[in-house]
Image 1 (tube, helix red, strand yellow):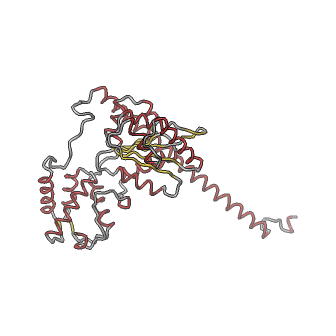
Image 2: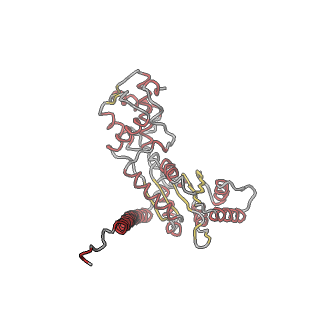
Image 3: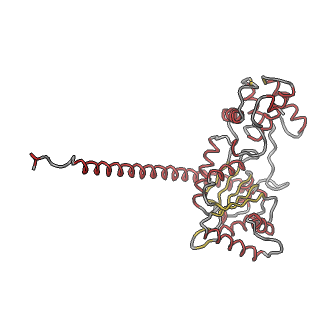
Length: 356
């Protein structure tokens, strides 16, 4: 509707993930580096967590686009309270294997044969589990068993766990130490800061050909940030409604009054949402409270995770440095060889008659 009114090539703030619209925030660039590093390892678990709407699914989509040239056999499932009896059929279905009326043992054998076939074809088997925080502990344990499958000392399957922040608590509270030890990379996406929130809005607008129609008064960006708390999906919701409001009112400048009107409309439609549009935290288990021991464990895990990520960053930087050094030496060696050949051809280094 408003696209034609404002001469836009598309909807800049659609809610469905679009990898082409990914805003390269500092957090997303770091997360992408971790994902690429984890993918290169080809084994274990890579875990990406964060609040609803921070762009976790979008990040995975962008990753798969970046590695599309590689031989990756990717399967994905969106878990919805899957238990140990459901997870194997779901994984088999994701890899296009028959699963109906197949026993657990038969499914395990089918999956192992299929993964070995992929390995023989030099394909990297990757399973992406979205909304992983809804998995039961027994389902997570079954995924760990699948990740242990190997052939000739090499893992047959790598698993990406993508979910809300509760995923980390699910693993810690259920003392899943074996699975934790299989997590080679873990990263938590955070909401955007105020400056990045403004840059995100402009990035999305410019991606669809925005030419300052409508124009935005400076205060709008701060208001949208405060209302959304920097969550990209909420920014999209507010900005989409703001552009629709501008179209309906035939406005070519959107100001504080316009955004206040839109926010009021959204609150009227969703009265359970507070003024900041910030949803209340969902407890880990209905009616349950977090015990101090679990909180201490999670804090310790967070600290270990941060230290591990720092080590990974150092490793990645050192790898890049070594590659540059090797490349420079290779170039220098080729240049030196060329110079030597040139001197030999011209006799530049041959002694003169008087020196004989």
